[in-house]
Image (cartoon, rainbow, N blue to C red; front, side):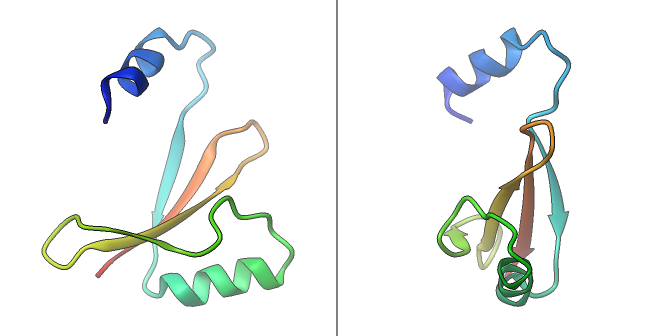
Length: 75
């Protein structure tokens, strides 16, 4: 995590969480399902990150208190 973001997290005083992550088996199908239900998703499509052996894909939406709900698939 970049230092500016770590500093912001350390200074948080309101008790809110930053995000909750859910592992899914098919990130593209999960994205399509949520989008078809009218859920507002932050990213335009699942994002690839070069983590783990083959990478991962993720996307986020906002929960009721502004927390991010992350959906992730390890590839």
